[in-house]
Image 1 (tube, rainbow, N blue to C red):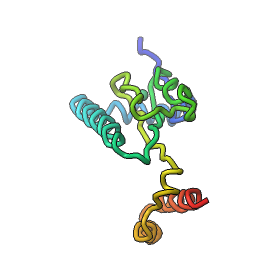
Image 2 (cartoon, rainbow, N blue to C red):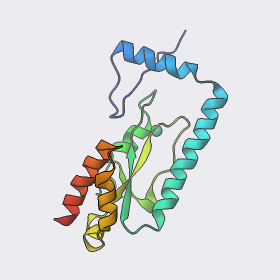
Image 3 (tube, rainbow, N blue to C red):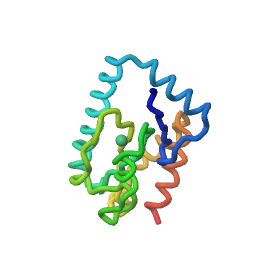
Length: 153
Ligand SMILES: [Zn+2]
């Protein structure tokens, strides 16, 4: 008997739309095993490097665990939602960031910046102009503009 596979979206909610669930599973089955192992190694290396890169950056105060798509509701749901350090849901001090708990973890990390640091060490006008001019990533541009407003408050 085929095991019923559940699919969860990035917020940890079960994907109930049968069309989306079937399309996701079909796409996952098409990926060949050596390719999956290659992606696994690459993903782990990237995530380890993110943690190493954060260590000597005084403006990074934490790392956020973002829940990726999962086949089961596993430990990652807890890692992405618990607030063990009073830094917000899924946020850890950079030296306490959890290890990847299992293979095929599609979660990802993002840095949590210390806005106070940037108030005292504002980004250069050159960098600000560079971000304002670059229309390739409008969502990043919007985020950056709002962030710049926040650190100037
Ligand atoms: Zn995970």
